[in-house]
Amino acid sequence: MIGTRIPALESDALTRQIERVAAELEKLVSEVEIVLDALGEPVALRVSKVLTPEQTDPIVAAATRNGADLMQRRDNPELSDVLPYGTRSGMAYPWILCEVLDAVARAITGHPDVAAARLAAPEGGLSIGVGDAGPHTDFPGSLADPPATDIHGFNVHVTLQGTGSARFSPVRSFEQVRAITERIQSEKRKGRTVIEINDLFPELYGPFLEVASAPVRVTTGDLLLFQARPHMSKGLLPTVHLFESFDADRWNNVFVPKSGSRREISELRADVAARYRLEALGYLNALREGSFGHN
Image 1: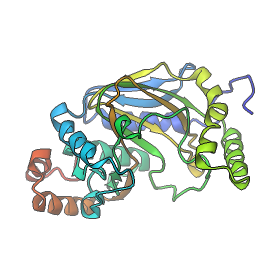
Image 2: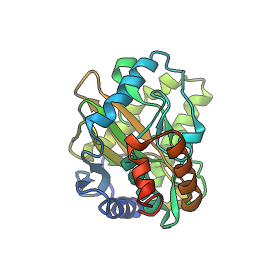
Image 3: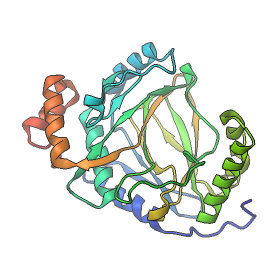
């Protein structure tokens, strides 16, 4: 399906997006690494030690207690509409992650007056059967786009516990994106189950690993950021990603932020931070310093 020759990327939009996000993150944190594939193309970002074990341990403990029933969610839209929130742990995440997600929103939309919104995501752990998968892109059976101003399919992958690695390789062309989608849709029409379709992923995506990045090691508190699904109207090719855990108790979460009005979100954050007493997570310090939405 792909052929033996590895072509250049059809669009440089992915490269430019990675560079914009990196530049915005460098205003917040010191260790931002641009991950290159084997052809020297920027494909992802690694940000080291954003969270500490003291911050992630309570999240993992709560997610472990509540994770036995994989369908159960501890939803709290009041929090998750404006703060990063884990639906297995039932906990808000520290303010620094909120700052990172805001930076992503600004970089991708190109607007300084936006902030990250709709930030509910379930923690995953190998110990509850939600962990690594083979090479894939996200939601490959659909090419539907949201508005071009939205953040769409840009993953912020947080390692909450343990160590692992990841490799990244973008799909090279939109023809290949469409061919993969058409194959998946064809299999669905034949009555194939989700599991049966997932079993096709090594065939569909394995060839892209020929030019994937070297394994990127991550440990507790590290972030990986990458475009996990296509955004056709913005010319963004999806990145094939392959994760491997080195520890049986590795936990992670993946935030895919939306964007909203900085003024409105800042006011809501200040309100819920005060009412839920989130001072230990850094939110009230940010409130006192006047930095909600103004970083």
